[in-house]
Amino acid sequence: MSYFICNSDASVKSDSVRIRIMFYNTENLFDVSDDPLTDDNDFLPSGLMRWNIGRYKKKISSLYKTIIAAGEWDSPAIVAMCEVENRKVLEDLVEGTNLSGYGYGIIHEDSPDARGIDVCLIFRKDIVRIAGYRYFKPETDGEFRSRSILYTKCIIMNDTLHLLVNHWPSRRGGVLAGDELRDKISAKAASVADSINALSPGQQKIIITGDFNCSPEDLAVKSFTDDKFLINVTRRNRSGIPGTYRYQGTWEIIDQFIVSYGLINSSHGLFAGDNPFRIFDADFLLARDPKYPGPVPFSTYRGYRYQGGFSDHLPVLLDLGFR
Image (cartoon, rainbow, N blue to C red):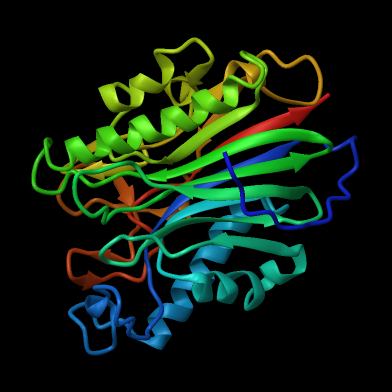
């Protein structure tokens, strides 16, 4: 396995109590410029969504507010994201808001997705050192036109954490839509995790996260935990809300965290406790569902109507300790 190597200084003290990792589907975080290589026309000032600089700045501000609040006013060590158009929007986020005070680094590459939306992450350089990263694509019969899997090797307080970030194809068009490609991406992510685990079976500290566009009970997700070294901690959800995404009145947990038993059973270094997972369901991220009883994520758009909200997904959090 080869890596793109970059440098970062990590000076976090070993008496830190919590390392918080966040995943967030940002719901179409586009800038306002046309990318001739992707289908981003809907999110232009002249496009169907009437996306403009004012709406874009509000979106960046909303994302900043969510990240800070999710960190409980101490910004998370790592924020993995999907539906991000390019590096520029990440620079506007980490340099153009008060996140600039936290010294976030960026990992991003353009994916082959037709709309140009990518998986990426930002990381606090005072906590996390990046030993390497790589984007993986599954082998397909034709051209791959979806999101790559981001693998990052992180060093936190001299311990090694392997992080895989995903955004699997949508089921738009029916339950079976995208199933074949989703299975291939799942198999590729599982293969990467297997290769890492093989270095010292049962001891490696691995996290697989992302928007899987299916539930923890879906076979494509359960295939990760068929092996004994991974567990889907999303199933232990004890948050005040039953899902991260609501469709036609039904909540689904499609944004998830899967961790290795090397984290669960760790006796030294980084570890995941008994209940490390939760959905971040702050009141400002929710709105009244106009069609069904109960709340729904306060999205930027509802259909083609601009609402000025945050995202159609709720963020998910995973807390690690250190001993």
